[in-house]
Image 1 (cartoon, one colour):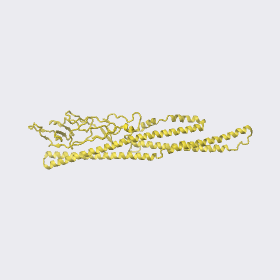
Image 2: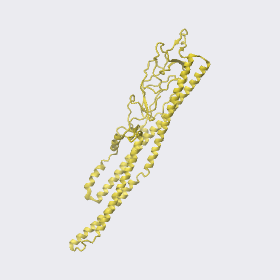
Image 3: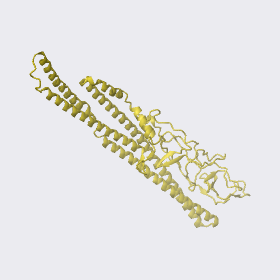
Image 4: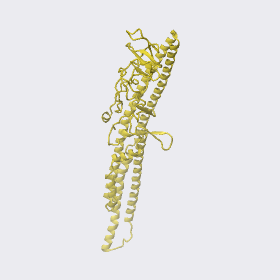
Length: 438
């Protein structure tokens, strides 16, 4: 329920490329009713027909598109910026700006990341080409671009939660590599388990001291020194030695309670913790590897599309020089390959976004679980240390003054405050991933 409350997960957006019908570039047949005129396009501009038969224009140099015929005196389009598909909210609540646009697209149109000021291609109003992208990919994880991102709301505001501050990787201080944010959290958990083990060993040493002390007290109580003392002084002396035996019994009981109520619970608490943490680490690492693999596929598909676009552009230029059936067939084949490459890229991006969404969800779920386990561990240790001090009070009231400071510190144990101080020092970033944009 907590994860469902925290996340507003939308399915990765999809875009589709429809294949248009190309007219010979440079020379455009006149619109209906104006057969007496022939439109000459500026350099770099080409004319195409949408599947619905409507003519539109593409600048293959800038990848701009427009419904309006560009002026022959300028190669600059009075068109909107590059096409962008409709973008629903991403997996972490980040909303991209802009309105959905559904213009006709051809296979040769560049598949680029969207800008924040795109307009509907169906509009005749001028558009502004943006120079900055909305996202940036670091170590195969896509984040909003720091120069253009809107403010993100934390999943658990004011709580310094693990799920908000460990999305980025951190440079390893001992080498040239990086350490994943999740790996830092895992190291903290394993360190906490080690500290718990060392506390248990400390209590065991304390028990040994108590047992040795009780043994020495019992032995001393049986000593015959001054046994010949008579009268009331002799009785008092005998009571002194008996009190040693009583004190020895108290210390033996104290050591037995330390073992059963403090040392053993500390040692046995989450015996399989390290094994469980390794499973958790492997699971997140596998999801990260899948994400890296999907990203590699996206880059490969993007490169393939670029090559197909170049091939289509080259064949289009050849058609301008020499018109032949073979050249037209080559263009059709190149267009089909370019369309397929565009479809492959969309599929790879979709699979990448799905992998990142899965990684994101598991990161949130797992970091919240680690946070819960850490609170539970601290609370458990606090309770058993309080039990230790209680036993000390019962055993040696004369040492109460040395125990009171411990009690005061234990009453002030605050897992949330401890986490805040630790996160402030070790956090790697509070910006969460967002879907990759084309």
